Length: 462
Image (cartoon, rainbow, N blue to C red; front, side, top):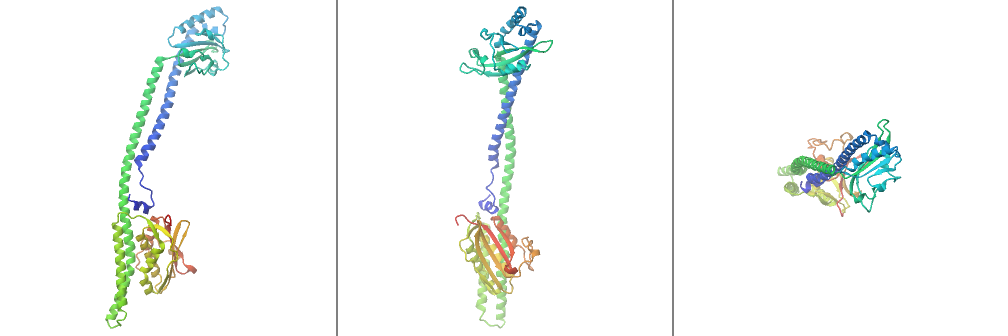
């Protein structure tokens, strides 16, 4: 969209929808994919480890329950039970995966271990063991090193492995279901670990593929929408460009009625002179005709120049200069109508607008004021600035606007004058609104006439 149209509409520069969407959606989708992938991978690993622990628990329960050797955990002084238990533990020692195995009594004392140095020890702080003694299967994985061990029973484990899966398996009495002790296993489940790693790779690949497909599908949709929006913006820009020229054409057409009226009156007076009147006033009538035609020609030239311009940028405009030039343009009409006028005194207020279009607005308002004073009167223009706005007051002593009509005068094609076009105030309001300004009508001083108030944003550095 050309700069002048964005300025007239008060709009921001065109939104690069594809770029903004690509950046924000990519970050969002990646965050969701990473978060979801981490959550699912954690759940998958934990579920597979938990299932491994459940299988091990079934094996231990069957192993120790078949020969009743589990009772040794409750009766360690029984030699027969001890022999059965040690025989069962030989099966444990023969397993490939366990790196270390411990058997705990109900009071937390290590009753048996693949590391004889741990037998008889008791660890006062072991939350997992406490949970297992309450009947829960506890499975988790971790890493240890010689420099740092997270638990006391990990002592010496770093010499055997760094990564391990730790399982606390409650051993129950088959008859009563009471927990008699706990078997603890430290394993290096290579096959399970490979399975988990493959599953995690597949999971992360699925997350990446899903995120990519989602991004591409959304990006394609937004790209199509962006293409449509850009086409509509171009159409809107063309329509706005045409509308701007149409607005100015309407204002010029509205204002041309005044110089045409001057031409007609002067031509009629010349005709009267030609029919036998005094020739003393002929030069004045000819001068009025020439000035009116020149004024109309300037407005039409201005219209053509604006309609052909590539850029109609807002720029700082002196309200005093515009107001005075408009009064000079209408001086002959005001003199003919017997209207006395007062130019504004303040000449330091600059506003943001398009000079030619603002001039047409003010000319239209001055012309309206003259038509409201067919029997003469006074016209006063004042300028001031307030709260970041430049304000132009145009006050006349004409017949004014009826309160019932005050809300309708800005409607297109509504006119209080016989034969009026009804577009002057509507165009003025529209143009000022495009520049971020406004127009208001108030009763004149003492309830006589009309006060028109124009407000526009002040230009920077003025």
